[in-house]
Every structure is written in C-alpha cells, then in structure tokens.
Length: 205
Image (tube, rainbow, N blue to C red; front, side, top):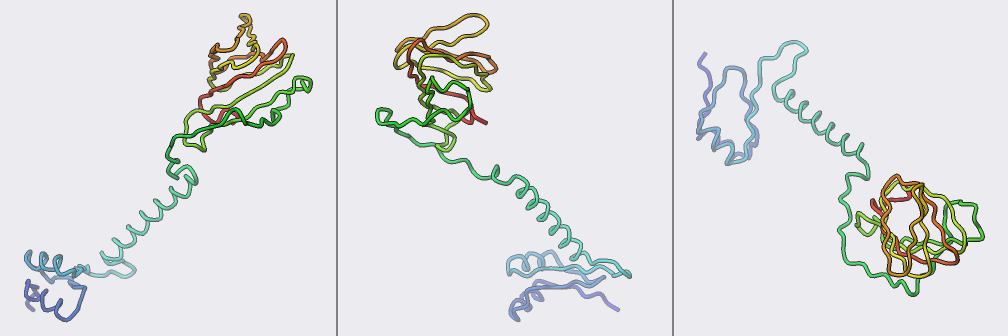
C-alpha cells in the first residue's frame, strides 16, 4: 500500500475545514513545504508512533515531559515563598526628627534608670539596604554585641562607647564607627542622643 504524503495543498485544505491538528500515522509523510504551511496556518502536527502494549505515543511523552517541567518550576517558586517577590523599589524618604516620639528600647538590658529609647526611621521596608534611627539614654551603661556594622552621629550630650581597648567619647557632631562583631558598652555620664546607621537593615534579626 502506498504511503500517504501530505503536501502544502493538503494542509491548506485542512485549514479551510477548520481542522487544527494533523496526525501522522506510522509510515505517513509530510513535505517540508507542508510543515511550513502548517506553522503559518496554526495547524499542529502530531506524529503518532507505532503503539506497543502499555506504551505512550510521542505526543503523550512530550506532553508528560512538559507537564513535569512546569511542575518542577512551580515547586521551586513555592519553595522560595516571599523571597521570590521583587523587592520594593527605593524612593526618597523624609523623616521629621524634631517631632519624633521614641518608644522604650524593646530589648531587656536591666537598666530601667537609663530610660533607653530607640526608634528605627529607615528600614528594609523602605527598600533600603541600611537602617537608620535615633537613640537616647540617660546616665549609666549597658553591654551590647553588634551582629552588624554601625555608625553613630552624636546629636546631643556625650556618648561613651567602651571596648576592651578603651573608651571612645563622642560629643555633638562626632561620628563613631563600630564594626560587626564588636562587644561594647553604650554609656553616658548624664545624657546622650545620637543617630545610628546600620548595615544590613535588619539589624535586630
């Protein structure tokens, strides 16, 4: 029996009949021009291989493979969770520091007499890789270990940063850098207010 060979004209006839699939049985042929015509007319060519008991056709194998790839991609996206969300685009942020109301320091330092207060004013929520805020403290000191890099700009009073190597005293207008991993004590003989900048922004974990 002669093998069927589909030509471009055959494909155009299928398109006229609104047929969007052309199944090629084992042994059937299709010319290169016919393939081009099928692509142009939106007709899908499915080459059906000779079936064996329990076997899949080529189309079924391709479909199964694509389905598995999609499943893997979706699974990876779900594993990423919120981390796959595009970070918020940073924009200019203005903070009125003069009218800022500062809450008590949220970490337990067992120094209630120091009335330590702190407020983050720039955070990762603003799209910034750094954080900034204000801190005030009264007479006394308390220990702290930095798990981040920090810069202090003294605004009022006198800020004492004590380490094993000695004490750095900051007065209004002074800038102090404290590298990550440093064990210090924040202190003041009477009162201090300063602006801090930390990197990364999530300094409190």
